[in-house]
Image 1: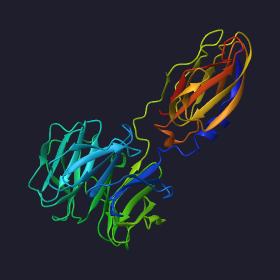
Image 2 (image 1 turned 135 degrees about the vertical axis):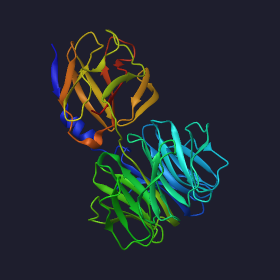
Image 3 (image 1 turned 180 degrees about the horizontal axis):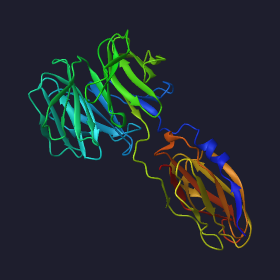
Image 4 (image 1 turned 30 degrees about the horizontal axis):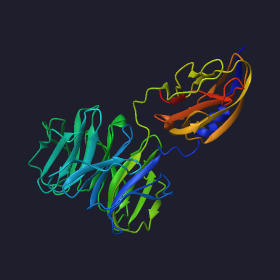
Length: 400
């Protein structure tokens, strides 16, 4: 007989815990180490993740690969999101400033304000090439992969410009002398930062509007379209601020970080496309009746129901524990096997001989896009020497 248990309370608890997939990164100069910082989107939990750099300028998070990139003293570098594995991507550059990562196209782009060029390389650092040359002072760049366009702001020319991805078809979008841009391809618009203001303009140059004024030196824009927010650094005030996308509700998130200048902000957010899926990982430990199964009956689509099979590897009914977390693990010495989850919550379950089912709705929350929930089942079994059996890990990847 298959029993059905309520899954919704477990999902509601686990998925409202801090996921690490909702954070900001920023780079700056000062504090003796020119660090890269990470913080929650509200500015809390401020942490240095990379130190000892030569002068990071622009920063870009690539959440799908779990990497953060930055430009620094003649090179582009990257690291894991926790700051480990710092490596050079491209070296021998002329004071690179703006940065954009095109994961789909397999390229990293940067601006050279002094050389008047926009350049790129493959993500492994090979294939370095100049895409656009003869510019006055490109300071920031963004890639619209879906539209096949590059956008940049030229601080010396006082213009926002664009081209095809191969550098052909250079055109002016708007006459704006600024420091930073960010694009919203879904809504065909571009946000810009000048010294004193934040604004928006459509991709075709129409609808130019100033949203926020009174800044000291606005720079380093970052967008959270799903969350309805725009973020930026004020280089003179040494703060990070955000506002609604219409410019209302300006708030200061980070201040007194110990830096002389905060230069750029990038957000770690779930990004699309994010297909829903599930997979087992790691190895379980067999009970008298085999390794207990832990599988999904369907993909975890946001806003829909999900059902999860909890098997029973014992010869009869058994009591067990279900571990849920937002990170996988591989910790040996766990009842003869490995603990495969960094648990946030642990739930007791009763397993009939035929197993049971956890079922319930997934919250209809678009910020879950790309978030994974990890599970592992452990249950008692007097028929094996260590007295317990465990499942392989189960990863649920929430998406569409």
